[in-house]
Amino acid sequence: MTSLSLFLLMTVMVDPLSAEDKPVGELFEEVDFSTGKLTDALAPPKTDGESEDSQPTKTAESSPEIDIPSGKWTVRFISQNASPKPSLLPKNSGLDILLDLQMVGAKQDNPHLLGHFNSEAAWYVQQGYLLPVDKKDSALRIATVKDFELQGIWNVEGRGGWFILLGYDDGHGYVLENTRFISKESGGPWHLSELRGGRGLPETFDKVCHEHKYEWKGDQPIRLTVQDKQLSLKVGEKDLLKEVPLANYGPGELIVGTFKGKYDPKPLKIKSLRIRSLP
Image (cartoon, rainbow, N blue to C red; front, side, top):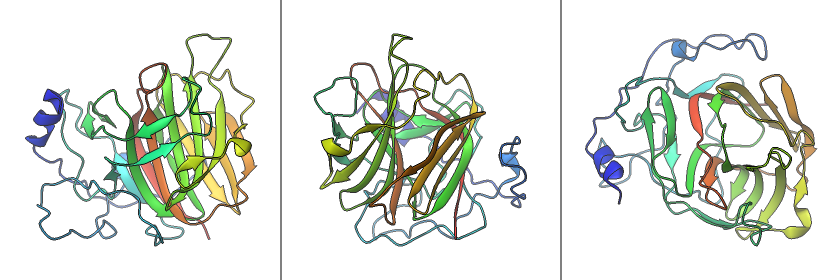
């Protein structure tokens, strides 16, 4: 365990924020998440022996139950703790740090892409962002959903790999992965593949975004939706993915993470995150 991880275990929890949710408003007008409500009603129940100050560290389970209501936004994280001193996740955030998620990417022999993944890194809050602690594989469970819309302000600039797991249930789901290479000519392609038994199916591996030279710069609004087995992703003003089919998609875990390949994991930083189920 790193010295930073040891320090975090001794750090005081961040108090959850409270206020009323605001209307959704226009799709990509700036959202003031500081007025959101960090709900605890839907947070997973404590297990026997779990302390008040412990962070959730469970893995995705089979037969998931939807935990995000339809229509109304559930805020999972809003910018807080502007101090450079790191602190733990709010205990009622509803986010789960996954420390033993394992999977194998569809192109595991390519050092730039998702390979043999084994989540090890914890997450913490620092300078207003939620981010992984170490330069290791990391995974963060956001929610259990079927059709959904996710919005937030994220910073995913720089080299390295990261992914979003969609409908993950007992080793099955879809993984959307992105790697930014050192060469501007190579760009940062987005690939999608289906998982079976925790392994990516090579025959499903596909480059799904032709804006492969899109370079993420600074904090950007993000909108991710899955509806009627179709995936869409908008970052800033760019529609990177639009109604990409997910033929075998079903209810499951929504997970975001970073992976170590040729480069260190992508320095993913989350400033705000909210989600709702779609009817």
